[in-house]
Image (tube, rainbow, N blue to C red; front, top):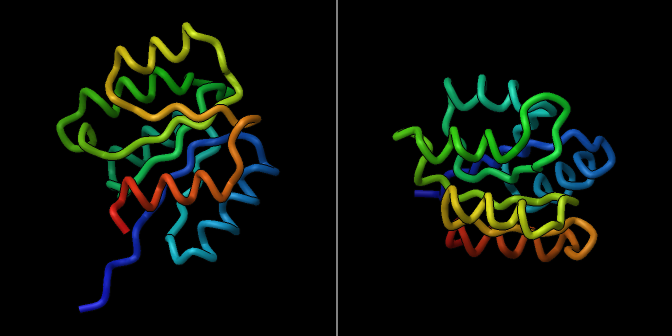
Length: 126
C-alpha cells in the first residue's frame, strides 16, 4: 500500500512565507493546509487532525503560544508534532513554549526552508 499523503497545517500570517512554504512542501508531496489566524487554526483543529503543525507565534488574533496550549491540552491533538517557526526570538518565548511541552522552536531569520523541510520529515519519520 502506498504511503498516505501527510497533511501539514501551517499557521502563519506572513503571505510571502506562506507562499514559499506552500510551494516547497507541496513539491515535497505534502498536502498543505493554511490558516492565517489563530481562530482559523483552532476551528480547523476542532474538525480535522493534521499529521504535523508548523506554528507562528505572532498572529493577528490569538497568539501562537495560546494555540500551542490548546493543542497540548486536547486529547485529540496533544501528540501531534509541532514546530514553532517565529521571528520572536526572546528567551521568554522559548521558556513559555518549553513549559507547554517538548516543541522545537526555530527562529525564522536563522532558519532556511530546506532545514524546516528536513526537520518536518524527521518528526514524521519519512
